[in-house]
Image 1 (cartoon, rainbow, N blue to C red):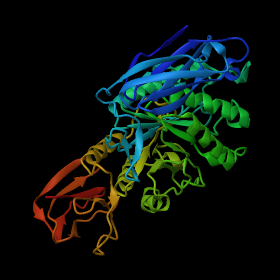
Image 2 (image 1 turned 90 degrees about the vertical axis):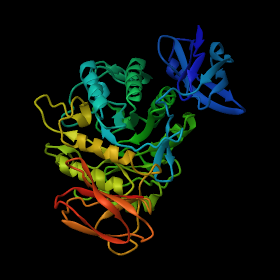
Image 3 (image 1 turned 45 degrees about the vertical axis):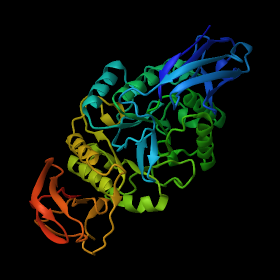
Amino acid sequence: MINWTTKTERWGIFELAAGGPETGNPFKEVSWTAVFRNSGRMFHAPGFYDGDGIFKVRFSPDLPGAWTFETSSSEAGLDGLAGSFDVTEASPGNHGPVRVANTFHFAYEDGTPHNSIGTTCYAWTHQGNELEEQTLDTLAEAPFNKMRMCVFPKHYDFNHNEPEMLPFAGSLETGIDFERLNPACFRHLEKRILELQKLGIEADIILFHPYDRWGFAEMSPETDDFYLKYVVARLSAYRNVWWSLANEYDLFPNKTIGDWERFARIIMDNDPVSHLRSVHNCGAFYDYSRPWVTHCSIQRTDVYKTSENVTEWRERWRKPIVIDECTYEGDINHGWGNIPGTEMVRRFWEGYVRGGYMGHGETYMNPEEVLWWSKGGKLTGSSPARIAFLKRIAEEGPGQGMTPIPNRYGVDWDVAVGGQEGQYHLYYFGFFQPSFRIFTVNPAWTFKVEVIDTWNMTVEEVPGTFSGTFRIDMPTRQYMAVRLRRV
């Protein structure tokens, strides 16, 4: 048995499936790869065992036209298979995988800007269909275009339920077989990734995390590598995948920097699409200057001050700054999970104006202990609507992303200013509440001015045009912004 996709779209998924041995351990004892060719270019993609005697190779073609493939395998029946397929232009809404753009920002491969507005639902794919479908319904109405999510289930406060399926064969009761994966669990994960893709949401896949009672955080190096190669082979053809090596890499007592560097090399060697890659910290930062790191995935390092550091971190690492965990809106007992919506929105705006990207999470208690940050479900906080308003403002901003605007006249020492100098200036005042502001810009530039209430979600244009030094009256409220757009 052999079949393959004869036609797919650009950045879609080609899949080749063939029958092979079921005896022994096909996960480890059969190697299978394919070479894909188009217009003189060549890509290698690893295959994987999907159970029930079926082996698969997946690939995401990056150009329309005629493509060919040829397989190599340790198994005679899988070796030397060859064929061709056609790739059409991308369908509407398919912009390709996200790439780094203009050093500090993101764009899809077709050049469309990606203003990353993330949220976190660590273990949402392990909660059963009813809750998972509710999560998807919530996301369909939410502003988020990236979700941090784990492959493994999670064991932590408010996360003590047993998942329906585990990524490895076996169970806690019968024993987990670390020599074999569980294809059914991965098929379920892929289904959810594809559903996120249809909603325009990037799946930021967390490959390892320390919150565990099954033994996944303490696997041997050989098992780590075996698992990682399998995940990358299965998921790399999905255009909306990002790779996060870990949530809080520095909480693994049995893993060294050498291990994380080896994991990065495995991903790079087995991902023909070259998706975005990073690793997330708890306390100590990873060395984000490492060449394999495409962007910085950061957890707050201070309970009070986080997004204010974006300017410094941009200059330190010269890469996109994504503060995936700036603390969560909620009311639980942990300091990382009980800021009000006003503070969450303030951190989003502060980080955005400084040229970074922020991540949302929600941890409000409820009788069922279904907290969004891990299980998904419903959003009840006040920040998502305001984050949606910020998303709209961002879409009206510079296409190349926000850049900090220097304080050339010595008057903007007390406010975050970003945009595109001379064309688009966005001032954010945070918890300050001025009744007026004196602005100074180059006299050769003329601007229209708008006063933005980021909490009440209003934009009011000030009559007239302005240049040089000028005064703008403001409503003496917190969380205000002022936008200057060049005439």
